[in-house]
Picture: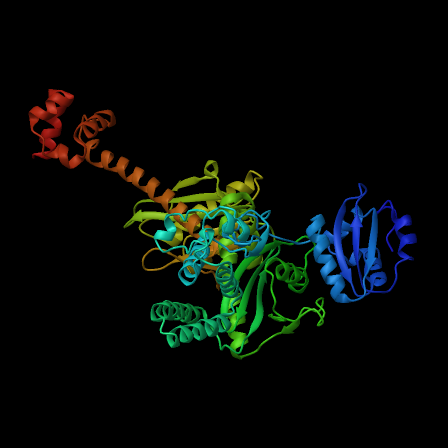
Length: 608
């Protein structure tokens, strides 16, 4: 049991714990201001609430933080676990507690609303205050517009914003708008379409949104044959076209056998901070609704605990009628009386589950990318944490240094080093090196020289070492770095290598001795960071090499001419552009640029 050093109000809490019954119910933790900071459900209230204040050291860091802030609690006894589940969902929605995992706010998502009017409107809206029946939320407007196109081709309903009733239509009919003449509305406002006929259209729209294709197809076919028997062939043809359109739409959306009547499918994957959930509604083998969202973890919840909160919330939000839910694993916190759980191993239901998991993986990638654009600092921190885990680094890789060599057949050999701090280029710490001790094109010896010079200097000056060293190269370059750092200098910096393919593109990350390939997909943000580091060190090395090569050209061809200094050579290059252009100039051209005496020396040099 915890003491007052952890929670100042523990004496009051311990007395109150004795009054809790051992029955199903919902509990609320309050802070010192009386604000609800956590809502939970329990099969046994006494046991569950007491567990927060026992074995404090066994709790996670986040639960310890919650316990420190609990000033009081209250509870509600309910008859069954199902009642506890539903009450918890309502209280979380009402109080939005700080320590509960919450669904991502969906106010930005559009809904389809059928208004509560005598002649209902079908509205696409983000306004939840409209009186009507809502369907959604839908992930984007494109999906809604496709749905709207299908509905408008199947049923004619009014799109105007006029308010009228059956009584007003009889007493004061409204003149039909231009959509009546265009055949896009049957003018219920003027009585051309009866109230009963209009309600039949709205009922058909509701069936489409609920996925009741079989029922509405049967109604349409029955009416179509009735029109044909009555020799009303034009009306029968209209219905025949609608039947064909609906059957085509159903065939495109059907993914499994129609024996899968009414189920919801939930796929979930998670990382340390977020859980990503996909929900699909299946009616008669067709996907009629799909929705993905993210949940920010508050108390290191497991996937099962996340789903125990999310499933009832999404069932309520989407007005689901399903009595079966397909999951990757059984959720013990959800009672069987609430919904039947299925964990399929094969067949149509397994196919649906795999489709949901593919959707949620795509959504995770999209959300991570968007979060990086909004909060790049946090995203870079997460990427570096992943790098630490992937390479099992002893320390968080705040500073990463990467080396690359550059030369042309051994001429003008140089090397460059870039440093990334917190996942970003730290250009003040970039360094370039002239290779001093290596003769000819020897990349391994050049790498050994610059690593020796860099880290012996840091060691002698007492400067901090980076948490990771990356060499731009494969196994050979990594072995050179290991020999210099570990065997010669006795400096234990972790070493990785970045190998390239034939197109000189980043191919793989190597780590360890013997080096092992660290599996990274090209779409992975960690792969992108490695690629950025490799491209940056290559750019820096090439730029330094070009500068040195340019200065070398001046020295060997122009400044080697007796009586011609670097200033004269630079003046000529600025005027004529290159040594080759200078070599073909006439004596008069050179004289006009640098005077007769020097011009004669240069002209004689190139025209001997």
